[in-house]
Image (cartoon, rainbow, N blue to C red; front, side, top):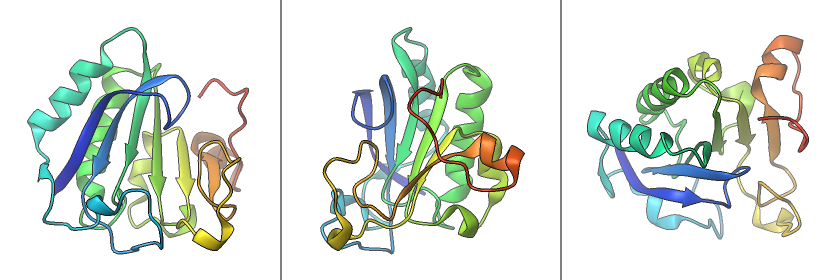
Length: 167
């Protein structure tokens, strides 16, 4: 597994100042994807324990409100195990900080549901250029959903994240 980049102070991918990691590899190839350099599974850098430790070190900073995991496609079968390992480590180290993931997979179609134990929000659905809406806060097209994962698991139905929530 590989990753493309780590942002130490990201203010555009989730609430507050966050550490973000962009996983490498995606098969969706959405038209006008904002991050096409992450599509090649052979690009980027090797993802390993040092990568996780680097993210955890950044996460220690008081002003970091959480972790955002994007791509590429973090929930692709080639990436899901590393994404789970990253989310699990961050969740264990910082239980009061939030974890957000962006994925082209719908919540219902995620191949390994173990990831849901560790994340707060999933922005799901492939970007659709014809549904692009620049007024949306956390996604690019109207078909995408910003899902409150823990509430969804508790209620047994998709529950959308609300801005006034703590996560």
